[in-house]
Length: 280
Image (cartoon, rainbow, N blue to C red; front, side, top):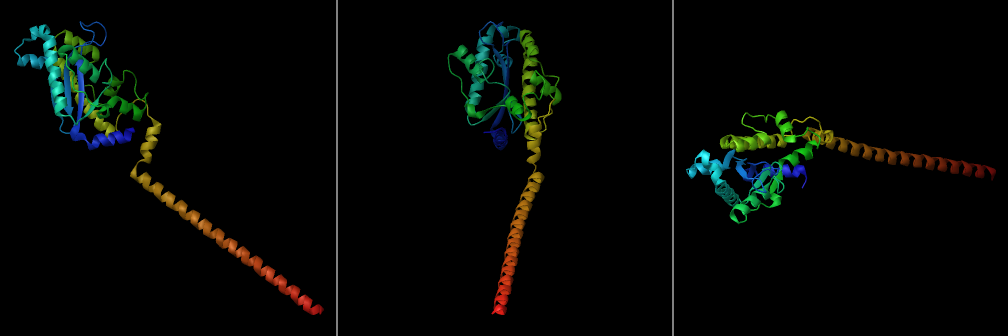
C-alpha cells in the first residue's frame, strides 16, 4: 500500500482511528530497571477529538497515595496503568493506531508490552502491524527524508504550530519525572497527541510546512489536480483527433496520387493506341 492509499484508508476510518503517545524514563541505561518505566499514555480518538488518559499520578490519586509517596509504589501504579491501557486496546480491537516512531522495543508498542510482562507476568494486548501507522514515516515518504532538520519532531513542531506552552522536550520530560512533576509530564504527553492530530490533518490536505521542498511530490501533487487531469484528458483527445485526421488525410492523398497515376496511365495508353491506328 503506497502513501496515498494509506492516507485514503485512514481518512475513511477516522471513527476508528486513534493517536497514541507516551512518556517514559530516560531511554538510556541510567534507570533502576533494564527498560525505562512508563509514566503516562495519551490516546486521542481522531473522529471525536476525545482524549483518553492513562497515568501513574491519576491511579495514585484514586488509590489515595500522596504525591510524595508515589515513588514507593511505582511498580504497582505502572502495572495498573498498563492494565487499563491494554483493556482499552481490547475494547477497541478493530481500531487503527497512528503514532510517532513507536516502532521498536526501545520506544514503542513492544516496550509497553515488555513493561507489562515485567510487572505482571502477563502478555499485553498486541495490535496487528497492519493497523499501526507511523506518522513520522508518512511525512518523510511524502516530503522527503531531508525535508526538515534534525531533530525532526522539534523541527516539524517549530514549522507547524507545535510549540505549545505545555510541550516538553525529551530531556525536559525525564527531568519532570525525576522532579515528581507528574501532571506537567502528562500534559506534555497529551499536548503532543493533539499536535499529531493537527499534523495528520495537515498531511491529508498536503499543507505541512517543511524546510526543503520535495519537488517530485510537488509535481505529482500538481498532476493530481482535477483541472490538470481534465486538461490532460483534453490533450489526449486532441492528439487522437489529430492522429485520425492525419491518417485520413494520408489516405485521401494516397488515393488522389493513385487516381492521378491511373489517369496518366490511361492517357498514355490512349495516345499509343491512336498512334498505332494512324500507322495502320
